[in-house]
Amino acid sequence: MQPIRWGILGAAKFAREFMAPAIHAAKGAELSALATSDPGKAAGFSAFCPALRIHPSYEALLADPAIDAVYIPLPNHLHVEWTLKALAAGKHVLTEKPISMTAPEIDQIIAARDAAGKLAAEAYMIVHHPQWIRARELVQSGAIGTVAHVDAAFSYDNRTATDNIRNRPETGGGGIRDIGVYTYGAARFVTGAEPVALQARLKLENGVDTWAQVVGEMAGPLGRFTYSAMTSMRLFTRQEVVFQGDRGMIRVAMGPFNANVYGEARLEWHHGPGLAITTERWPADNHYVLQVEAFSQAARSGGAYACPLEFTRGTQAMIDQVFAVAEVIG
Image (cartoon, rainbow, N blue to C red; front, side, top):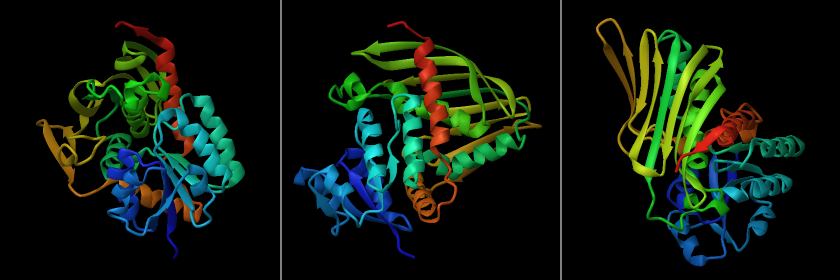
């Protein structure tokens, strides 16, 4: 069966270090082309994929009939524009998160997806990792009893990277758009719940949120529970999500959003009697490769995809709600 032939719009550092190698390694996928006007940036991609075709513009790559799917790692404020252009060009498209700046913009992409008959999705890789699939299985099967509380934290420190797009308001920067998609979306994915009441506090620098605390309640098929999340671009590195029930607890730790970067991906199931801890580990799974393989398979077959735009819209709506209710404290 012919692989899905991929092109990448832009020679972003993240694409060079993570997604391009993942496409190159994935079964059922072929890294075929890159669009960049800078030969120096192209060299880093050609080093591991010598047969890569280099297009001098995004438009040229979209016009390439030998490309089936496009990966878009551009700055946040360009995601909607180029996702729509890729769909109009007849390509399947996987766009980095956040795929849009507001939830209504995703409605435009859904309409374009349906009109084109192509697969379009946000590159929300964690839902493809067995660590998160297992967390959802345990929580939804009642392994921790009734869910009472979910808390999540994601932080890193990039204060010295003043030119980074995450520190610039004009490129859609800020911690919530960069990593809130994980602390909010992970809770939604595992529990199936949506927020019903939220409060938020933000700290801003140069017009972008560098710290955010969100508290409130969520509700869904597992009932109603309290929720809290912290994101920051100014604190020591931390990644953790805890699902607290009345008969147990699931702790997803060791870089749950960057599996096997800070340590071996693992899940802890705390349960009784005797405060037992059952630990499961995934030392080799690469969620970027798994994401590309799942996307390529769905694009080829027209089958279901683990992170459809409808799910992505729900997370973006939660982000919109956080900004709407937030109190700025610094």
